[in-house]
Structure formats: C-alpha cells, structure tokens
Length: 458
Image (cartoon, rainbow, N blue to C red; front, side, top):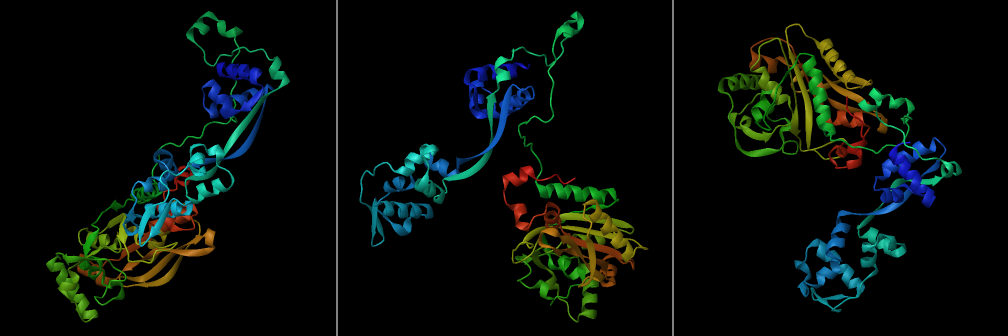
C-alpha cells in the first residue's frame, strides 16, 4: 500500500475511528488528502468512510477586528465623555450597545461613562472561543455581524475488523531505473488508483466573466474578418448625435438621458458643414454650439461614425467598449455598461446580410432563441430590435438595436451612396442571459463563490 495509506492505517489501529480533520492534524496532512487515502483503503474493506455535512461558525471581517482590538463599546469608553454628534457611525452603534449594558448614559447630547471598569461580557468570551457561542449569545454575535454560519463536508473514518487484521506493506508508486535493470519490479506490488476518490477543490486564477465574454466576442468578429476599433469616453455631441442624424431637439439629448461635461470640444469644419446642411434641410435648424458640447458617450455607435469618416468601402469594423447612460438602475439596466458595436460598409449588402451576421454571432455565443422586431432609430432605416429569450423570467429581453444607416448619415460622412449595416448590442445583457443570472448587477458584485464556480465562457 501507499506510504500514506500505511500511516493512516497504523493510526486507525490505535484510535479506531475519527474525523478526517482530526486524523489529518495527527498525520500532519490536509483533510482532503486523508479523505482520499481513506477512500482508497475503503475499497479494500479496511475502513468505512461516512460523508457528513457539518455547520460551523466563521469570523467575518468585522468579527476578526473585534477579536484583535476588543469589544467596540469597551474601546468607546476610552473616548468618553464625548459629543454624540461627533461620533462616527460605528461609534454610535457601539454607544447603543454600551447604553444597553448600563455602561454609559447620554444627557444633553453628551455620552458619559457610568461604569469605570465593566466586567468581561459573554460576547467577549464567545468571540474568543466560538464553541461557547450558543443560544442568545450566538444570536447577538450574528446580529452584530461578527460571525456567520457556514457548511462544510466532513468525513468520518472507522477501521473495520478486516483493517485491524490487515498486514501493512507498502506498494510502489513509481518505477526506478534500478528496479528495471535489476528486475526487482517483478516482486513488487503496484499501487492502484481510482478516479472516483475525493480530491481537494482547486480554484486557479481566471479572468472575470465580463473579460471572458469580451474576448469571446472579439474572437468571433476577428474570425469574420472584422477590424477592431476603439474610441474616447468623452465625446462631442457632434459625433455622438449630430453625425448620426439625431435632431438637436431630440429627447435623448436631454440631461435625464445624457451625462454632459463642462466645456466645449472641437468639431471637424468641413464635415460639420455637410452634416449641418442635412440637419437644416430636414429638421429646420442646427447649431455649432450645441454640436460642440462635451458628454460621456451614450453608445459606441459614435465609434462607427468616426470610422465611417475614415475608411473606404468595403470595410467591416467592430468595437466592444463602455458607454454611459443616465438610467434608472434595475435588474436589466445599468448607468455604465458595455456595448458590442459593428458596421459593414459595402456596395451590395442588404438586410438579409445583417440578419445573417447577427444570427451567426449569437449562435457562436450559444443562443438558440433570438428574434428581430421592427423598430425606430433616428439613424437607421429600416431598423430592428434584437431580443433573446430569458428563461429565468420566462420573457424576451431586448439586447440591442440594428439596421441600415440612413443616407443622411452615410453620405455626409463618406461621400458614398452605399448601404452600411449597423448594430449595437448590450454586453452585460448577453452575459446575464448566458450565465442565467436574474439581475444584471450580479456581474459586478464580488461574490467569490460564484466567480470561482461559474462555467467558463468557451
């Protein structure tokens, strides 16, 4: 048998039974290794292994601080007397507990000590020895968020009569040159291995889920021959709205939708003339001053607008980056989010090509149920909204918009009368659907267990 199996069996012949954690301390091994060795011995009938779940208490960050620095209300006594209004939030909480214990009184807004040297409390005893945290004291420790109850798997190991009689002899785990040359391996017993034995859970370093999905999106478009582009977070209203044929009195430009920044930006003179001419012809007005306003970009379509002014057809461009919206935050809306933007600028493309690109993109991400609905956007015609089925809430969720840029957008920016396919999709919504999350905000919460155990976005 393996040397470690021999050690465990020798120990069990003395103690008869014990928990993996207890035996591990005596053998100076980890509990996971002891459990794995025990399962190997159990296949030979030498031990019985019982898997049980145990609940235990663990210190929170605040609990560790109390353990190190002492009871908050006891520390507060050193600062008294003091004006209650000058105490910070945590000190005021400690004051409440001190008053409840009869250590402190508050008169005319001043907190003063009543007891000079308070006795050791049950909380202090329990926080130092969690085995004494029971009943009402445990409720207090939980209420004060010093401890939290968790669950772990434990293994109870007991030697069998067959194990008691077993002869302990070691089996080899690897061949050496000496064994091969001298032929000693013929008289040795080889250790067998089982893939079903428990092994320690290992959590290797990995990318954040959003980073993973961004890289996946990048690979999809790069494989399709797209060029990647990036832009600035701070843009002018000219590129964010005007170049996209959004009227200067459109509601989307109002403060309730857009984060504006003080100051003015530069706009390209010749391009501004062409864009302004279109706006005045169709909308009746256009102002250089309004176009020069600075803002946090509300969509990555601004990158597409800039690229159209630079590239020559045929061209395929995409970007994955952050945008900013003055949104009411809820389970499917964020104020800061990522968008997946793309354009195809060529002579002979049409709406069927747009649907083909998007269906291919979503199929690569693993989405089977996707639909397109007629919609209206100021800068595309025809326009569609792209929805995906969200199983947790049994509903369709809008992921973004798509369409063909209007000629009022394309001609001033490019000088060509060619169609431009365009789409803008919400990355966080795609991630939420893929991971089966019920709330988009869960992507930004530091839930270490979920971050460790979630599936890889392949």
